[in-house]
Length: 441
Image (cartoon, rainbow, N blue to C red; front, side, top):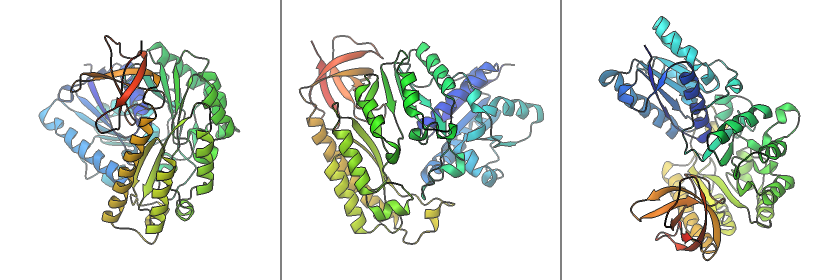
């Protein structure tokens, strides 16, 4: 009998790509994909475990899904991804509802695991490394006009707060030819915007003998894509040549995501980051000096062990002064097994949250000021959704990534999802975070 399979994916877009490849594998093996959890015989929960909150979210999702083994048709519950890699041995006996744990580096083994579950009726832990590069297809879960391309996995940077090297292992690049073939398949499916992701995309190719991100971008821009967007670029590897390529190549979105994490040299050293404040400021200057004014997204961590009020004020002033377009703020999460876990000077949750909230409020003010500069200008906008409350269409410019950045709310007689339109920005939303506009004549 053909088994129905449902999949829930938590966490980052890199996880989403793994989930899409698992869906492709199970469908290719003859399983039927199902959106209704209550009607599925097999439910896969693809998890994150980067920080404590992500692990808690994973556990809650697992327990909620486990109810379908009591109330639905679910016969097998599989937990995949980072939580399985990090915690499977610890929780195997406690989470007895789970039939199999499949680690993030062995998701390519999913069909074998499912077969074994039914053949033996025994619980399984599968954490062995599988050649996931060989997976040629994906079942796309994003809107058809954009998709993520994961060009690498693992990480060699060993930031003292981060568990990724423990979970995923060392840095590994995907072969360029495989990435081109994968992209061609996505284009055939209707993709117009390709979002490059990885733990550290700027290190792409180093395990092949040389950094090859520019070579990859050169090959991708030969394909029928409108925007290519770069995420997760490490500051010290954002070269002048890369900046030039983003600025001058019409197919590369004028946008770059650079996790900076902090601004004070003392904290950056303790984080084992390779940049200092002077380097970061020079990089921001170079990005803002480009002809097309490249938009920057970054993430910052506040409340790192031994972060003093002076350190925090330095970070606050840095964000205020440079008014980065898109900023994600995180409170430091104490993760067992990381060097920072045993450092002295851990701060209370109250102080960490107060500092994080202060930075978020600051960024909101910066966003309002940044958005005012768009008023009166016309931009190419990718239409994606409808805001029914405001009776307006929702889209993005090339300066905004999906789901995490500013939107453009605009009026038009008629539009089609996944199509680009020239939109004149006429004002800001009531809260000042989104742009308002109308189709340009």
